[in-house]
Every structure is written in structure tokens, then in C-alpha cells.
Amino acid sequence: MKGKQLFLTILLGTLSAFGPLSLDMYLPALPDLQQGLQTTQSLAQLSITACLLGLAIGQVIIGPISDHYGRRWPLLIGVALFAVTSFVIAGVTQISTLLILRFIQGLGGSSGQVLSRSIARDQFSGKPLSRFLAVLMAINGIFPIIAPLFGGLAIKFTNWQGIFVILGIIGIILILCVLFFLPESLVKEKRTVSSSRAYREMGLLLRSRNFMTYVLTQGFVMGALFIYIAGSTFVFQGLYHMSPQLFSFIYAINGLSIVFGSRLVGTLINRFEEETILKYSIYAGVGIAILMSLSLLLPPNQYLLMIGLFLIVFTLGSVNTVATSIAMNLEGDKAGGASALLGLAMNAIGGLATPLVGLFSTNSQAPMVLLMLATQIIGLLIYRFLPEKRA
Image (tube, rainbow, N blue to C red; front, side, top):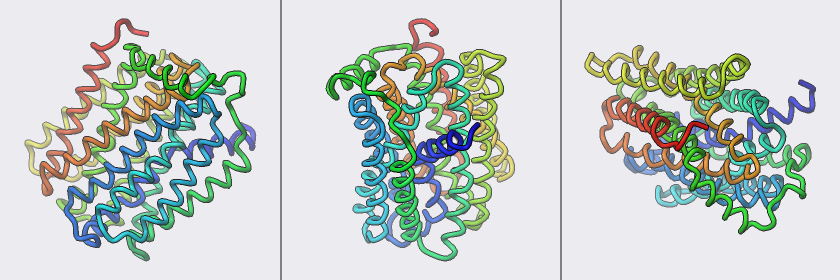
């Protein structure tokens, strides 16, 4: 891979990582945020949900717009909104204000998620798209590793507000990179006639059972990741009394499994069909979730939990890469809208599921594990029974 292409790939991978950047970096500081704003665990976790909903809704707005106006300017505006909101969050004193700003922050960050996939589809299709997405999502997967480690280190020298200042600085750096180094990928001849036409085409996507099979399958399977994100900090730091730094290290190790799962797709795609890889990745995730649930019958054991989480997150990396590739290949002429629906489902389902972890219990790993099992089973049922015929 040539130097310029490598840089652009890394840049797209970083832009696609607004989810991990927005969520994982401040996870070690979540208990500190709860105490600082004098709020409850459930409301503190709701700050994750607010951001996830912003990430979801923003993609539905930005994706179709980019099919008409191109990818570059919507991306610049979105990243700028993310940066500005991050700086403003650092000054809030009430949980209600934080929740509103986290939603707006998610709206801005969604541009990176939805448009990185769209830009990839503008340039690749078929198995080359799968291979490129495997690289892209492996880069994306690095951020769940380094973000909590960096957050855990930063919380030793600053407070939770300082982490949002750092996020704002990262946003400014990405604006400059996009402005000077990322060319427009959607030529005018391939753009939709109007933005309203782009939204109508997205409506057609919603009525496609085969396309929505992959969207909803990915959304529910990946819901397990957001449940883990919301619950793990309280389970490991509360139930097992880990320090923020040790939790960050464990979280980073599990994040490494996403990289392995994504890279495995890039290797297997030369020998197996995408559909085969997706099917067995889903089955493996359900099987691991069942074993984790059965382990609840035993006395609490942090090592069993860590092994189970590592394995299930590994399967999520594989499912995310292959389901995205298949869905984007099905509707390549509507790349912005297709990418938007993929992001909407994943972030909306994750956003709705995360507060349940805190509502059910604050001193047990059972809600997190059982909710992860539930989303995996729902994803499997959708994959098996929703499509009219296997694409």
C-alpha cells in the first residue's frame, strides 16, 4: 500500500471511530462523572445513550444528503460540530445539559461513521470492498484499545471535563486532515438529483427485506458491544474493585479482539463466501453468549467473564465487517443512504439497550451478560427468518 493511500486509509479508519472516541475514552471517568454531577449510575450511563442516539439519527440526516452534495463538506461540518460541542461539554455542571450536548456531539460525530463507509463504497465493490472494510475496521478497532487506556491515564492527571477537551482537540486535528488531504470521492455524475430524491431512495431501502436483514442483524448483534461498553466499567470497577487504570487495560485487551475479528475476515474472504463467514460468526457469538450466561450459575469469577467477553467481541468484529460489506454491495448506488441505515440500526439499538444494564442492577454482572445474550439471539432470528431469499 503506497504512502498516500495508507494515510487516507488510516484517516478514514480514524473518522469511522467517532463511536469509540466518543464513548471509550471517557469510560474510565464515568464513575467520576457520576460523582461530579451528583447523579445516579443510570443517568450517567444515559450519557452514553444520548451520544449513541445522536450518532444514529445524525447518520440518517447526513448519509442521504451526501448522496446529493458529495461526501467532503458534510464531513467537515459534522466534525466541526463534534469539536465545538466537546469543548462546551467540558464546562457543564448539570446532567440534563450534559445529555443534550452529548446528543449534539453524537450528531456531529456521526458524519465520520456514515461517510467513511460511503467513501469506501465509492471506490470499491465486491470482495475488494470486504478486504478494504476489513482494514478500515481493524484501524477502527484500535481505538477501543487505545481510547480507554488514554482515558485511564488522563484521569490520573485531569478530571472527566479534561477528557472532553482532549476530544475537542482531536476533532480540530481531523478537520485539518480532511480539509487538506481528503479529496471528494463522489463525482457529480453519480450524485442524486436532489436531497429529497436521496431520502426517497432511502425509503426504498427500508422496504427491501434482504437489505434490512443485514442492517437489523448487524444492529442487534452489535447491540451486545454497547451493552458491554455501558456495563463493564461498573462491573469491573464496582463488583471486582479494579482501578480505572486496570479496567482500561482489560478493556483495551478486549478491544484488541475486534481488530482480530476484522482482520480474520480479510484473510478468510479469499477462501470463503461472505455469507458463510457471516453465518458462522453469528452462530459463534450466540454460542459464546449462552456459555457466559450459564457461567452465572457459578460464583462470580472475573477471569471467566474476561475470557467470555474477549471471545464474543471477537465475533462482533467479524459480523460487523461482513454484514456491512454485503449490505453496501447490495445497494452500492445508494451508498450514503445504505450506510446511514446501517449506522442508525447499530447505534439506535445500542443506545436503547445500554440504560437497561443500570436499571436492572448496579452490583451484578448478570444484567450485562443476559442482555448481550438477548441481542445475539434476536440478531440470529432476524438473519434466519427475515429475508425473502438469501441474497
